[in-house]
Length: 305
Image (cartoon, rainbow, N blue to C red; front, side, top):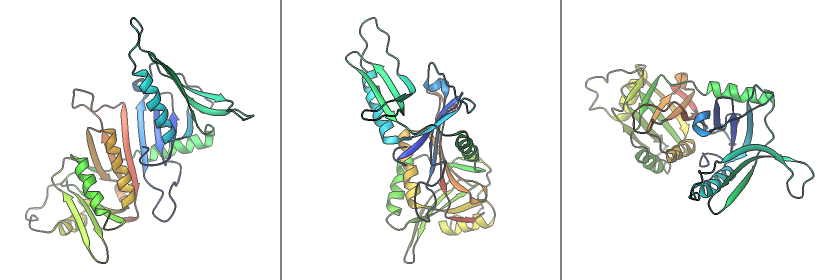
């Protein structure tokens, strides 16, 4: 997520820990929308052996943090934690706490997210500065935004090769700033950039489909990709929207999280382009429901359906 934006919210509830980017408003200026939203949600027991949380907001706590500082602290703590323990010693736990501390040269305490662990040769304490915890009203706004962001597209298509898609988008971004994306119920994903001089695009066909699906019309193999896309939209068997190229490029960085499957879809009425990253339980093809990770890209032109 540090490839997507500079600041995110950490949102802790009695059952989940979440990293939320851009759910509480615009982080980008201009007319190209507020930028992509990213949601990474982990079941409490996946991350923590012991977990205690108490607040006046229904035992929910949320605060903003600089992602780069958080990333640096995690790398440092994990490097020490990876050191082999002394003979007979159990691996040290990593303790994560929310604390108020008095920074050097300051007269008032400030909130920090503190990571602490010990290795065979060193111990480390990393204090990551965070914002004041969000007020009750802001926590409610964050929860409402999170609930709204969980609306699923009626049709999802699986992209089996994210590096190939990223390579394609890297070439298309040199052509223009606006990208038309279409998803059909036949399992087709269309990407197209148009300028006053040239139109360039590509398509992925016969992808795996989840949700609403339809059989591709017989005899459309000899038609151009753009013609097939237009006809599918006219028949109500596809959705087409326009997004900012930079937003899609940012969302593609999320393949660094190494998902097992990636799905693209368009929320009904062209509300947003949704990218869902799916993880399997190790050694199986069963979805790991303790992890949820997805991005939502704002729409510049609602397009048609």
